[in-house]
Amino acid sequence: MLIRPDAGDFRLILLYTSRVVYGVGLAMLVPAAVAVAFGERMDAWSFVLAASLAIGIGRLSEMFLQTRRPLNTSHALASVASSWLVVPLFGALPLVLSGHYVSYLDAYFEAMSGFATIGLTLANDLDHMSRSVNLWRHLMQFIGGQGIVVIVLTAFSSGAARLGTLYSGEGREDVILPNIVRTARFIWRVALVYGVIGTGVLWAALIAAGLGVGEGLYHGVNLFMAAFDTGGFSTQSSSVAFYRSQLVETVLLVIMTAGAFSFALHYQLWQGRRRELLANTETRTVFLSTLLLLAIAALGLARTETFTGFFELYRHTLFQVVSAHTTTGLATVPGRLFVTDWGALAPASIVAAMAIGGMAGSTAGGIKGIRLGVVLKGLKADVRRVLLPENAVVMETYHAGVRKIVQGPQVRDAALLLLLWLGLYLVGALVGLFYGYPLELSLFESTAAASSGGLSIGIVRPDLETPLKLVYIAQMVVGRLEFIAVFALIGYAVSVVRGKV
Image 1 (cartoon, rainbow, N blue to C red):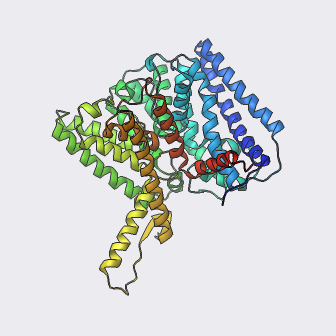
Image 2: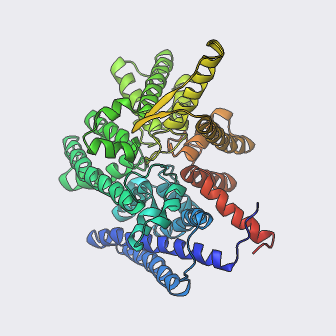
Image 3: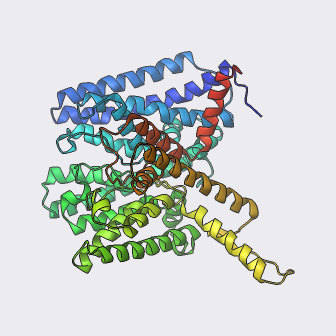
């Protein structure tokens, strides 16, 4: 049944979208202050200009679009999708004004990659980018990782009921606390507490690696946001390889893994329920798939003799597989080596890891461990029904906070989403094939864009074909919002085109 929106529906969607724009405008004042502190005058003005524009539009919209119409499900989903498309328009302004991007489209690509915690970049001369602009790239990941729509709107809402669909529309599934506002605040509390601890440990590790005190703090802040929010942007063009430190890599492995845990699991751990870490079906699925893909990648690299010693092989394989599986995108080797030196098995493992992704309700992207686990449980139940007597009662369970019975609708929904994800990966790969890139490279880059994996084999670059840039941007949005919110916005757009408004 087609929706038939009227002007009031669009008024409500624009109102909520403008509130998110306003919140992101306020966030731009942070890099503006950093630019002033470091004497980066031109960048300071660009952040002030972009922030003023976003804040001004937000305030004017609040004045002229105010409405008493209640927010229903379709409004909420469309507001989420439109916010994710509009916010990068403002986030891209200081990027393009910095001079490190060939065009506004490249800056928009970068902003979308940041907010969606992808990590693919089109920046030129990243090693000489100003501190404030580089901080903004990482801050976008931090904001996007927590969920820009719900996090911003909780600041403007006196009630939580109407935020429920906004929360799920951003790819969140678990309501951890009794209402969405308290859940959103818990997510921020986790991020900030871990931020202080993680940044402190990284700071110490970076100083040990040879950076100065001030430089170490700057890199530590950026690295934490990139790792915990599974974003993958780096301060240097060589990513983590720049530091040449096993200690830094070890700390990042822990932070990336924590970022790929669901916030529901973090809540259980904060409540002292450490057994949940081992009992949870999703953590088991992700752990086992990581071990399997790590073994396959190591076997492939051993056959190619890319690394001469076992320790170096294990060190780099572990980091790349974990970075891919958590959909972070940080790397200790140049991306082109995946093509020239890593053979076939190891890159295939990286692609599979990015495709699966982390846990549902985390900052990670991809299919998610719980969906894969439920599908496998459903498959196991079907096999048992075939093998056991006809009158046998077959029941499979999974653990997610509490023990639950695997039911047919759950398996069907998980399988449907799995197929949608595979289709999303394939679409980008087919477009890459159209532009002459080999299948394995096209599939690698497409999976990185859609799953927020962020690792790149070099297709994403400033002179990338414009249609392919647009396809990757679309994959970023659809993958980050996990389809439903985007479908709702498309429904409104179709209604406009067909004259149903």
